Length: 99
Image (tube, rainbow, N blue to C red; front, side, top):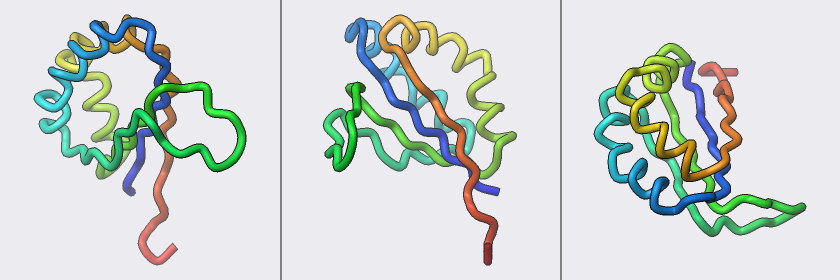
């Protein structure tokens, strides 16, 4: 079942985050992920949103996401992401076909 990873980011060190971002796709494309959205200025329609960027990704299943997020390559680049931004990351299950 498709899963969606949603990251809400608050930048703390833009240079570190930019290093992460420059290396992200080389790692991401190896794990069957799809980038659905990456927006530094989403339109807030209701409530407060105290973040700087939203990223939405999809993976064929939870195992694919975990293979990506736990891979040695991602762990290496994620040091810059963690140094460059505070993050809230959600993993959301998609609907089953016909459901």
